[in-house]
Every structure is written in structure tokens, then in C-alpha cells.
Length: 230
Ligand code: URA
Image 1 (cartoon, rainbow, N blue to C red):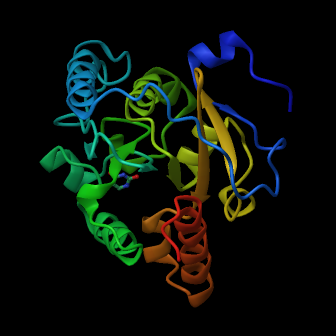
Image 2 (cartoon, rainbow, N blue to C red; image 1 turned 90 degrees about the vertical axis):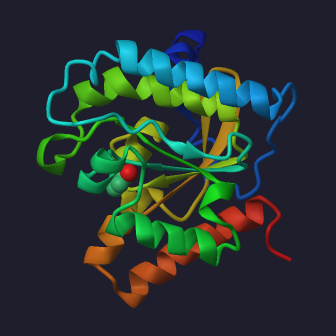
């Protein structure tokens, strides 16, 4: 894969998937990080702008409210899912249904509370019948996620499931092949390591020891990357 161009950097993430194959530890420049209050107010402004102008969410009719995302604006770790489901649509909060309960257990198993991380989705409004987001929907709504990531400047992102991994890594490769190793994404000039793993909803459907071991191994790689393992 060649280096990302400025034009690519302006429209969305650029994956260094091939460049970093097999690389577990990626240096992350964390200079010029705005203070928390500035980050929170930047997120508030982005949320307001998203709800006013998102070309997808302002036209979509199935949802009752948008689900912007929530958590610590200073989080080192971001979890990015696919799109809000029924519970999320009702409450306006990401990952509060069954899959969300499992995600919370995963976060707790890493020694963190839900409030310590930041949780968002590729789409900010619930798709009809929880359909997989289309390429067009993602192209319209996900640039706001890119901005969210640029404000938070996480040290690592966990991509939950195929739509999230495919958007972040700009690939059509399946999640089974992507998970278990680090990829690097450029969001403008911000470089963030991304660890794809299975979506908790998939894990609930296929709750096998093998899948659980794989997800836990992915999360342990994230802990290692962030110096959370002794
Ligand atoms: N699944 C997702 O991908 N996101 C949510 O917020 C809830 C379920």
C-alpha cells in the first residue's frame, strides 16, 4: 500500500494495513492534545453540527433520535461499532442493549469502566430493521466519526465488527482475516493503531470458546499496546 495522499486524508481514514503487517507496537505522536474542556466543547459543537447537517441522518426517517457516542473525551481507547439498535435509538446512548452489556463486560475485563473509554458507531442513526449500513450511508455519516476521532485522539481504536473495520481500514477484507493484528489508520495527520475484533452481537450469537478466546486475545493486545499489562 502506498502512502496516503492529502486528498485521502481529507475525506477519511487511510489504512496502513500492509505496511504494518506483523507490527505490534506503533509509536503514537500525542503532541498538541487540546485540554479536556476544549475536547468536550469541540465534541458538543460537532454533535450539534452533525444533527443539523449530516446528509444521512437528517434525511433518514426510521430512527427516533441520533446516537452521537459517549465517554471520556480524553480516553486512550475508543470502541467503534456499526450503528445504533433499538435500545440505543430509545435512549440516545451507544451500546446499551444486549451487545452493549457484553461490551461493558469486555471493558471491565480489561480493568476499565465504561466511563474510561469512548464509544461510538460508524452510523449515528438506527438503520431500518438493523440492516447493515450501506456504502452510501457510511460515506455520508462516517466523516463525522472521523472528526470525532480527530478530537479525541485516542491511543488505540477497537473496531467492533465488519462494518467498523471496513470503514476504518478502507478495505473489503472480512473481519476474520483482519482481527488479531494491528493496523494503522491516518485521520488527517493523526495516526491511530486499530485492532479489529468480532462485534459483541456476533459473539452473543456464536458464544464459542474459540471466539471468546480470539476476542480476549485481541483485547489483550490492546492492553499491551497501551501499557496496561505488567
Ligand atoms: N451495535 C452497534 O454496533 N452499536 C450499538 O450502539 C449497539 C449495537
